[in-house]
Amino acid sequence: MEFTKAAKGLKGQLAVPGDKSISHRAVMLGSIASGNTEIHHFLQGADCLSTISCFRRMGVEIENRGNMVFVHGKGMRGLSAPSGMLDCGNSGTTMRLMSGILAAQPFPSTLTGDASIQKRPMKRIMEPLTQMGAHILSLRENGCAPLRIKPGKLHGIHYHTPVASAQVKSAILLAGLYGDSPTKVTEPALSRNHTELMLRHFGAEITSEGVTAALMPAKELYGIKVDVPGDISSAAYFIAAALMVPGSEVLIRNVGVNPTRDGMIRVCQAMGADLTLENVRSREAEPMADLLVRHSSLKGVEIGGEIIPALIDELPMIAAMACAAQGTTVIKDAAELKVKESNRIRIMVENLSAMGADIRETEDGMIIEGGHPLHGASVDSHLDHRIAMTFAVTALIADGVTTIKDADCVRISYPGFYQDLSRLLEG
Ligand code: S3P
Image 1 (tube, rainbow, N blue to C red):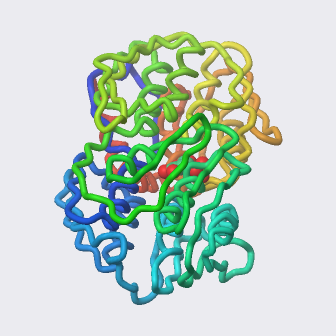
Image 2 (cartoon, rainbow, N blue to C red):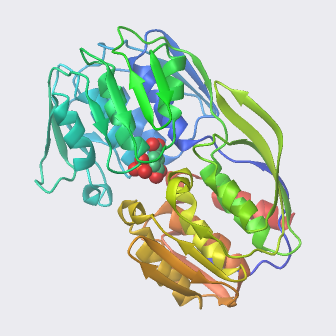
């Protein structure tokens, strides 16, 4: 797909699709709750559809009515054995979180997915789940999917995660629901806390203090109505586009601004962005706001430490934005980027270099010298949705034509992305 430099600024309003992390969790908890769960503004991306299809395969009736998804909960012990493998597609969240639930089921299961997910590390969940009494095995014996899970009797543990990962934390907490004693997870830095917040709304006894979450085993969860806020990770592309393209002014409505996810906003403001939060409100403890973004002259910043988990998926876009900023941007403590849907450090450096950026790879991040004009180039998304969206936006400030290979992989998290971008460009 081809993209060219923006002729004028982005103008207008939009509401981005529902949050991916929250959409997954609502289907999972809704499936093991008693009673019905109604999910509004559910993300119809391929990843969340993978979660729906896995739970349907385990006997859960899920009606997908477009913007609203209705889950007929089966109760904590009501899932049935799937025939054949459960296909998680490209979705790490589906595979890792579902492993926590499956480890406690009285039937065996096998989880698989696409080529990318079969290369992503699963030992990080296998280890703590095994400590809890789960029987979980990598069929490739390299710690990657397919994973074979056999019935096990689970007990609570206090696990100190070596990396701040909400997927790992959530897998342990979901397994902990079925344990015979309390479960605690302590992280090196706080990762997104959607699982903790949602578990509480479904009736679980869970508390959080700093970087530790503590959960009591549950007898039953109760279906609820979930209003999914707009995904800040999707909003990030429009924030960046509006900041970088002269003459832009965009209002992004109903964006989730949970403090464990809002690192992009904080970094943009530190870079000198004209970005304001309006109409801040909260639903089910998930805060939401409208974001007003105007073109700004940006300056380089240093990004590392505890903020990293709060903007991990936005770092590719931030790296590209740093090219349009004056001065140096250092991104560190972000080695996790190497084990996402693609190696996001390597690929950002390759693609941005092809466009004329001054960027280099480090052990745990990137260093970008801003202020060098970019030119169009052929870039490869490596089938990574966030890389594709990052370059569709970066193309808007590059002279000439940028061609993105496999650009349609945006369907993973944002099926209407290119339409929404064109609409704002037409203003
Ligand atoms: C997610 C957590 C993050 C994030 C991913 C979604 C989640 O992964 O990158 O896109 O929904 O819990 P890690 O927990 O592996 O950092």
